[in-house]
Image (tube, rainbow, N blue to C red):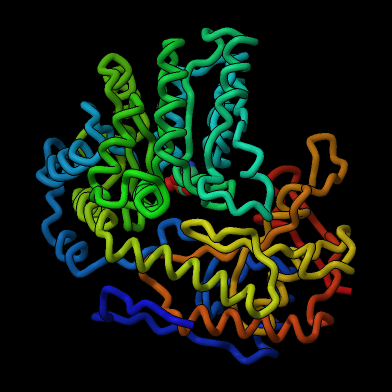
Length: 455
Ligand SMILES: *Cc1c(COP(=O)(O)O)cnc(C)c1O
């Protein structure tokens, strides 16, 4: 297997430790077989999420020292604002400490009871913020997007026919905004094509419906467009980003992804009236408009991170690392959702463990085995996370997945090779994955706190 060399070298290191197997088993018992409840210091390789887990560069750390902590008009805000304007072209930049606050500010002001907000696939926090306004968050990703075997280049595209039918059926007044998640996180980090973004934009404009991007992984999406879409090979990532944002009226963003920062976010928009209303709300819940819940130094780290994420050498390494990791798993006989997306690999636990009963939670059991056999932390997206229905019954989702999210600039290929070896050990002895039963669960979002037992 050919590895690309990292386009960076190590200046600071963080010690990680692999506990002995019997200690890992003890930690699992103490955590009631829930890897969310294991202390990060007891994990060897942590693939729980790519959110807020990026390694910052020397340039970002140096930027922290330039933090201007003035309450109003701090220097770093102007760098933050100008950077975001140079990438998006939007006229108003509203800082927020995380992406979900930007979403909350947007939907509180534009969505109401009975409205419908279409997207390719809404991320959980986006959905929750829409539903909080008693509106409906509707997923209209193309059919290829939910077919784990499809090799289509842009599995994050939205189904324009379905969007058009929706508008004609319910009327444009019921649709306060059209959203699009780039890349499509909840759909496996699959990219959206420029052609689809442009056509969606035209459709929404025809009906005077505003269009916002959920731009958390916009740079990774732009890189896929450059690689895969006709006409973009010779364009810079900045040019592709400029074009992409030009089709929308604004965006929400979590800087914990392609901001390469550990905290931060923003809402940017061309709608001056909305921006002014939102800014007033921001003062109420987040802070003054030139810091919005962030320290001056964090604004600086985000501003610098946003520019670093546009670096093609970085993006090539990033997307190749994820792709090669996925292919190493496949070569080791571990089935994954194809093709690898931008930020994570999704292992198909149902195919990996065909004889494991769904009501003994194969995906979750695999996350337990990964920790016990190798100190690796992954997250189940299957029967435990999605199975419990509002009426209390269990209905297992079509796919039983285990997500291996790759933090940015954190792990080397040797670390990921190690993860593949842990998988191979389990492949060779499937009895290492043990049936689970639920001992205690919360009424909603049970996966974070659920207690289970093996047996
Ligand atoms: C992470 C994420 C969010 C929410 O951002 P937070 O900073 O975690 O609040 C919204 N949308 C997508 C697609 C995300 O990945």
